[in-house]
Length: 102
Image (tube, rainbow, N blue to C red; front, side):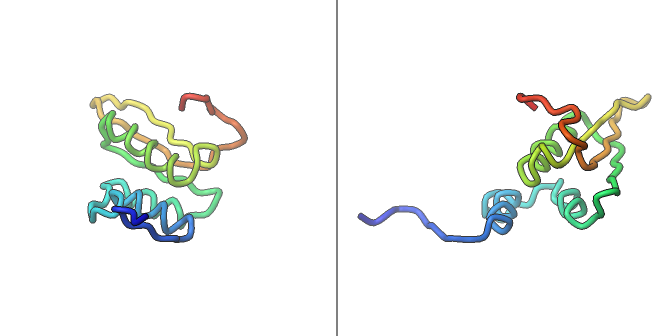
């Protein structure tokens, strides 16, 4: 029986990159540079982001947790006086702040 969809076998990281880039539709997430930078930095380094909106925080979490696993990375955030948000992306230490529904 012939399938009416395309199927390829790829390594896990390449397949996940395609999902992060909009499922192969050619659309790249605006947060992709953060994911790329996270994959390049050392374990003891963090990324600090500022001038974010609340929606940006959740979108970052979604991308990074899906790509790298919520057991490995954490996105902490705080609202600033000007109502923007600042976020820190860093390695999660143990089960720090890890919830089942996160």
